[in-house]
Length: 258
Image (tube, rainbow, N blue to C red; front, side, top):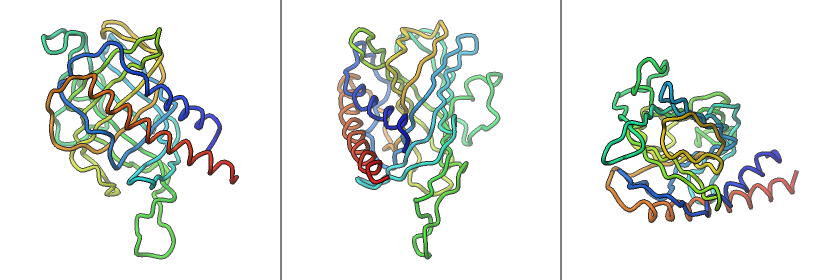
């Protein structure tokens, strides 16, 4: 594990503990991060108002399938990616952003801005060399580099604006309909994705913005009930921070043996 990755994980662990300063009503809830769980770091976020397109591009860092069972991923840039079509159309339910769910049954790998709201989706690729896909055979049959790990269509979106003065993070939240799980990692039909950033604070989506952050995608139960957003964020923040602290400790132990 390189120094840059360790720094990113340490920073994320500290920042996710900050409470959001400007909570908005949620249209759905996300379960406390559960398994399987893909983490991504060194994520670049960009929003283009002219095309209503939010993109997140980062590295797939690891997969956790159970408490204490985490597998490092081999990844190149942009193998952990999100694309969502979000505009600044106001509604009574969401006064600062408009989003139309992607209800297509399959993932559209040729998605462009030209086919509008059908573009919203998430794709995670990379390799998991120590994850044994055939436990009944001799040796470890890992997942090769550049493999598709999971992907799906975004069916709901919400966000909470952070506070620059207090370093409270901005949090983008997505509900994902899983369309592909080629290695049977166990995502089921729904996943939650959270993108956290402490250097972008968009109050709406009428202007371009660019920032960096971290990303987390994890299995979800089948529900979409509205709850107060601050309670949800505190729950997710505490659970995410605990998981990150364990990963930091494991990485430090691994690095000391190298």
